[in-house]
Every structure is written in C-alpha cells, then in structure tokens.
Length: 301
Image (cartoon, rainbow, N blue to C red; front, side):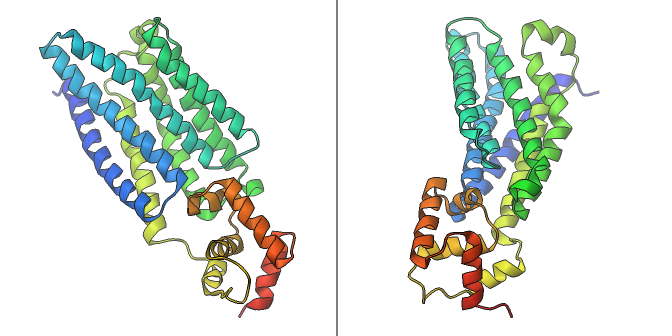
C-alpha cells in the first residue's frame, strides 16, 4: 500500500512538470496573441508552480540538512510567493470590470501586501486568512460576473472561459480551503487527516482549462456572421488609422471596451480615446451609428 507521503511526493512532482509544460505553451500563445487576461494568469501560474516545487524540494533538503540558511530561504520564498495572489486578483478582475473593481483591486493589493510583510515581524494568522479570503472572493466574483452575463454582454469566448473556470474552481473550492486551513496550526489538528493536498490537483486542472481555451482561441476562434463581415470591410475610404480600423471591426463583433483592451493589449482609456477620435472623424455619436454607417458602406449580402 502506498503511504500518503509517497503520494504527496508523486503529486507535487507530476503537477510541477505538467505546470511547467502549460507555462511554456501559455507563454508562446501570449507572444503570438497578447492579452492582459492571459498575462495575469500566466504570472499567477508560474509563481504557483515555483511555490509548489519549492515545497517539495525544500522539504527534502530540510530533512537531510538542518541548516538555518535553508529554513530562512524558504521562509522568505514562502512570503514572496504570496505575490501570486495579486496576479490572481488582476486575472479575476480582467474577466469583467465593474465601477467598483478599481477600488476592490487596491483593497486586495493592500491586504495581500500585509500578508507578505507581516510574517517578517510578528507571528500572525493574517497571511493564512488573507489567502482564504482571496480564494473565496475570486470564486464569488466569477460567479457574480456569470450571473450578470446577459446584462454586461460578455463575448461568447469569454463566457466559455468563465463557465469552465467556475466549474473547475467550484469543484475544488472546499478542498483548497481545507488545504489553506491546514497551514494554520490551530486548525491543522482537525483536518490533518487529509490524504492529499487539493491545490496541486486544482493547479493542473485550472492550468489545463486556461491552456485549452488559449490554444482554441488562437487557432480555432469562434467565427460569427458579423465577424466574417468585419474581416471583409474595406475602410480605405474613411479617414481612420489602422488601429481605428481594428477597433471598428471589434465593435462590429459586439466587443466591449474591456474586450477590446484585452485583445489589443492596450488600456481601456486608450480604447476610449480611439473610439472618441472615430466618432469625431465620422461625425457620429454612438456605436449604433457606427454599425449603421458600415451597413451603408458594405450592405449585408
């Protein structure tokens, strides 16, 4: 019979190797098709894989060597590995931005910063509670965005990604919370009977979901009737730049400013500036007028 320690070693080893493979694929896709959403996830994922591999290798080294330098190195590494939660929050908020999203981002960055710094000065369970709070908040935020999908007009590809992430996170949510509680000495007594850690398994699953979505989005994008038409539009007769032509095509596809920002790897304020310039040049005042204008230039077949 395989004991739990052997199972844990195998689990951390396999998840680290698979995680590195997913990271390389995502890095390649990010270079081919830049996206803030993918960038934030990749940063979160790489730090998580580093943290996970560190748990395995450091525990093995500590068993054979009682050097204080190793203990101190791991203590520092553990603290800074919590930076992954900042990228997790940015990834979560990139799914859709509400009016309060900026304030929430600042709040969680400060909370995570406290979780990183406090262990260097005092013993506290605040870092552990911070991790649990961020995980629960991420799931709730994704769920809220999904429930509001009709009102905020999510694109089909973003909706598919959100549905897959929600399903994966919801399935492992309880296990992840138990893993985090196990790191709190006062609570570990009650839940240390768990045979395996859920987080490495979740990391493989969420990495696989995002990698699959990114590969499909790069090589097999959803093609709608309007997007086909957008690709055929010729704006050479209009006083617009190349970037503005790209934005017109995305507007016709029904993309929001957030979607356009993610796809073109520019800020939302830059998107708004381009759209305002478009409206001024074409003497229109709304997206509807822009769509009607393209209908007049290129009537539907």
